[in-house]
Image 1: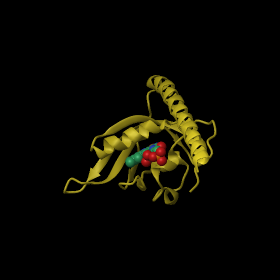
Image 2 (image 1 turned 120 degrees about the vertical axis):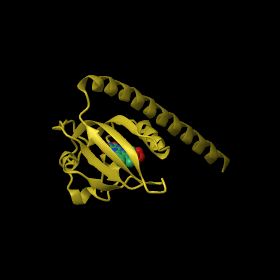
Image 3 (image 1 turned 90 degrees about the vertical axis):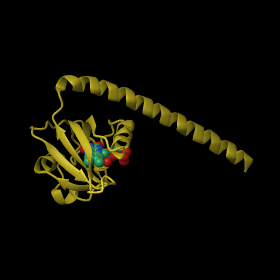
Image 4 (image 1 turned 30 degrees about the vertical axis):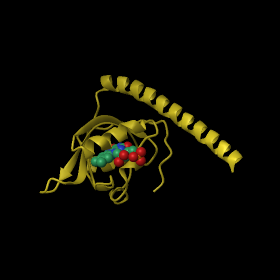
Amino acid sequence: MKHPLPINKEVTFEGGVMITETDTKGRITYVNRRFINMSAYTKDELIGMPHSIMRHPDMPRCLFTNMWKSLKEKQIWKGYVKNLRKDGAYYWVIVYVEPKYNDAGEIIGYIAARKIPEERSLDEIKAKYGELLDIESASTQTENMITNIIAEEMGEVV
Ligand SMILES: Cc1cc2nc3c(=O)[nH]c(=O)nc-3n(C[C@H](O)[C@H](O)[C@H](O)COP(=O)(O)O)c2cc1C
């Protein structure tokens, strides 16, 4: 399924808890009714989909790198996430993610619960995420520049 094109429209979450579960690769295995409604997808579309389909371009990549690192280390991860809906609109949530285990204590998947974030803390988060995005895009530009220089130099050698 293609990533939706973001539009600048916020949808506010009515309340309660939005729950999803995934396999070890982050593919969705369970969604509750509240999550289905907020995502604007159907349940059939969501099951089996990679959770990354909801990644909003305003979310810094390092947040998710940190999420997966914590989960693999069997820790709970908590953070603010801006999610992309099927219709391109967005919503902010505070997410708690943790591993699910079998009897042998091995990770068999993950479970996430999302609530409405506090408006006060959200202002700070938006500013911090903006700074992180700037750093990430600057480092991508540097990487591209270095790749181009190397490619040009290799071209001269070959
Ligand atoms: C249980 C669980 C729930 C997740 N929920 C979300 C979510 O609501 N929104 C989101 O963008 N990523 C979520 N992720 C993280 C995605 O799997 C993915 O790492 C992230 O969207 C970044 O995409 P990328 O890894 O392709 O860069 C979740 C992961 C797990 C294991």
